[in-house]
Image (cartoon, rainbow, N blue to C red; front, side, top):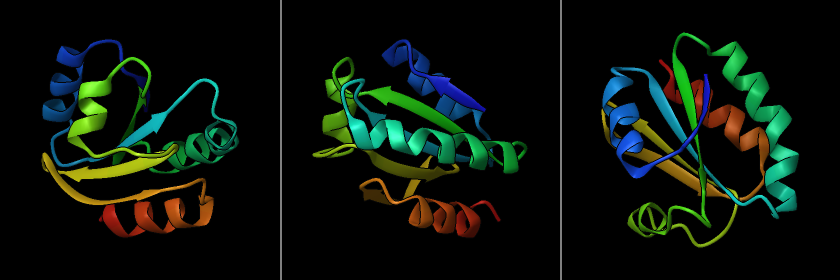
Length: 107
């Protein structure tokens, strides 16, 4: 499932509601070319891991507090959360690395 964050309160609910699923925070900007390039890869991975992972897309221009908390400095940035704990992260439009990270963390 891909969810576009609508409010900060919604963010906490989605993280808590994920249970033992892998949560991938996708920090993006509407004007970010590399972010747009990653979109097809993200959708493909979400489809593949539909029962084991969710992606929450977070617009960096709307949710600066969340970006600051996760120390987002460039886009796209991906933060991986399992059981409400940050387990990994990386910045950059690297579809291969995103695939590898998700494969290793959904177990």
